[in-house]
Length: 240
Image (cartoon, rainbow, N blue to C red; front, side, top):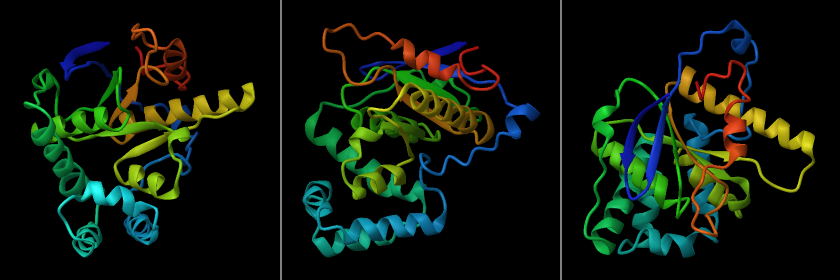
């Protein structure tokens, strides 16, 4: 059921999910450890340390922390203890800096139609798989709402520090690659179950692009495979 439209130079279709209480789903109990974002204190600390120990990270860091010395950057990251701190103290400030320096401003409308105590699935087109959800999260923060968990393709995780960085930023992995039909179905079922669990059981907002990659012909249509994936969950509640 579509409950609202948010405009942010893109259209976001917001779908409200029913609360899941089925015993059938509870007995599935998938861990999702391979694809889920970081949540535990130790894995957050370990991820930050791995990032700081990775020499290939620093070329990116020079842009990410422009104006800061290397030592200040290390200290800033070492102070982070939670995902929320990482998003508010690192990501939000970087997004604000980008908006201030490269645009005439940023507005987001439609959030007033959403219930802050409920979770939503955001489906949108995208021009930049990093910046589009980052701008959405920034808009949610400004309006006192929880940020989204972000779907990102495994094909984009080219280095270990990239995986660590996006998982610190509440991203979960969409498995991609040249695999057989059975493996594709298995991965799609896992992804569908994860999204359902995030929204219905953990009360997390979720963002996913409406298609893999950007349109090549200007026709920004939702991929049928995405809708089929969402409907693979046990109780078929995501799109109802």
